[in-house]
Amino acid sequence: MTKIPPVTDWATDYDFFDPDYIKDPAPVWKELRGKCPIAHTERWGGSWMPTSYENMQAFVRMVPELSSRNVMLVSPPKSDEFDAELAEYGSSAPPITSDPPEHIPMRRLILPLFTPKAVADYRPFTEQLCHDLIDGFIDQGSCDAALDYAVHIPAKTIAYIIGVDGNRTDEFVGWVRGLVEQGMQDPVKLKHYRHIIRDFFAELVDARKANPKDDLISNLLSQEINGQPIARKAVIAMCDLLLVAGIDTTWSSIGSALWHFAMNPDDRLRMAAEPDLFPTAIEELLRFYSPVTMARVATEEIEVGDVSFKPGDKVVLNFPAANRDPAVFEDADKVVLDRQRNRHIAFGIGPHRCAGSNLARMEMELALRIWFERIPEFKLTDPDAVTWAGGQVRGPRHLPFRF
Image 1 (cartoon, rainbow, N blue to C red):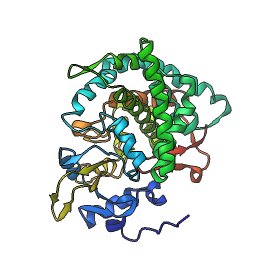
Image 2 (image 1 turned 90 degrees about the vertical axis):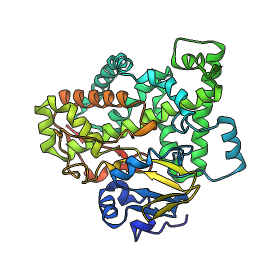
Image 3 (image 1 turned 120 degrees about the vertical axis):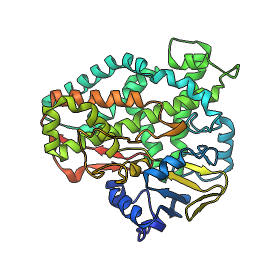
């Protein structure tokens, strides 16, 4: 295997997958804000990366100049097979990979699943799930908080919402990790796990077409867009999006929050003593540990200051970096549990703002609130054993806790 050279200048040669960057990217963001407005790299197919809140606000509204047709930080290599797959499925995960106005009717199909009222209906399931998970390890006095707790909450909840077998969530998590983590750096694995997920939902969609049930897939199949029945490939792709986005992002947010409290005992003690802080604390943890970075593709030449994007250039929407911008957030590099003014963009902004933000907040609130009710005292057994995933979605993947 070819050894990847280390980064020597982050402004001209950044690397999403640099181990130190994945572990703590904040020092790089701070350096880049003072050094250049928008960094560039030729690694991983090449891209541009702004780090300021102001630029992020501007770029998400550049439609159609910056297209969402490919939101991945690393694009699959061009091939006849990949082109044929695009012809079969179209955009890989609508509505997130569709541009206005086409994405609007697709987005309207999934928004009813995540209204405050709909999310309230899922709350009893998630609440009981949190208790059941803790019941499984509390008597042992230890657990892997990422793998025994955090990951199961979004995985089983989204499985419940979609109407797929909740007993298979370990499989689903493996697929998602293969796609979003391993697949980012390995095109063979990317293709492999994409096909597994697509084939899984293709089979389910065909089964529901033949025998409709009272579930999400049957509901989607009954909908129309512009007076026409929704296409089979669109339902498959939307289910794909719900599974992948519904697991990895919230798992990362819950895990990052638990890691923070384990590493910062003063905040942990305050959180345990002041449960009324949960609303502001959750927003602050979302700001500070924003998990998701997206990408856009330039469709025309764009001038931003002294930077020129050419058609086909990839622009990285680094929402986590924007949420640490000291020009917008006082004490931006500190977690302030009672922060009152918090205009974070952890869920994105603009027409592609995360449709599942209400669900993510509910899952995170219950996960932390119930954990603190039952396990208020806890710590990492070995901080050096913590591992992080990075790139598209950043979050801890192993959290050995003792309590």
